[in-house]
Image (cartoon, rainbow, N blue to C red; front, side, top):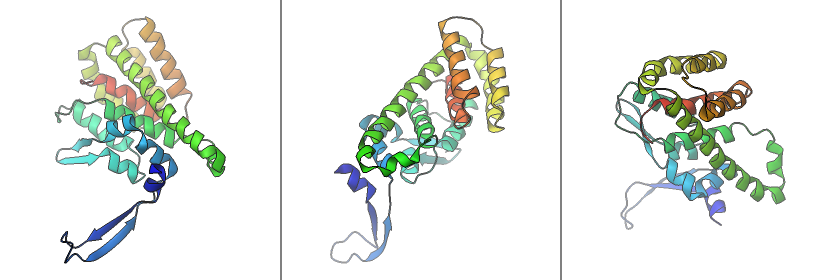
Length: 223
C-alpha cells in the first residue's frame, strides 16, 4: 500500500546518473511515521503544503520537505508572516500557511499516543487525524476572515508587528487583550471570533500559539 511505501522509504545516492558508470555513495532511511504518511497521502493537504515558502530575504523552504523531516512548520510560517508584515515578499498565498498550522496543531497536541499501539485502531485513527486537520484549517480560515471583517486595513497594518512581538514572547493574555481592543463592532463575526479566542487560545495550553499565528494571517493581504 502507499502508506507502507512511505513509511519504509529510502533515499539512495549515486555519484552520477549514468547507469553504466554510476557508483553507490550512500543510503538514507527516511522513516516517515504513520501520521505523516497519512497526511502526505491526502491530496488536498499535500497540494496545499507542496509550496516553497519565502522565509527570509534570500531563503525559501519547501513545506512538504519540512513535514517529511518531522520538523514543526510554525517557525517557518512565523518567519514568512514577518516578511509579509514588512512587505518584503511578493508571495500572497494563505492556504499553505493555514494548512501548515493546522498540521502542527494536530501533530503536537496528541493526548493519547497509546492508541497507536493497537493495530486494529491505527487506520481509523489516521483517518480521524486527517479529518481534524481539515476541520482545523476551516476554523482557522473562518477566524482569519472574521479578522478582516472586523478590523480595517489601516488598523491591521498598524498593529500586526506589535501582535507578532507579543506572540513571540508567548504572552497569550496580552495577545488576546490587544486584539480585542482593536475590534470595531459587535456582530456574528465578532462573537465567532470571541469564541475562537476563548476556546483556542485562552483555554488551550498546548497549542494556543499555533491558533494565534493563524489569526495573524488575517492581518495580511492574499487569499
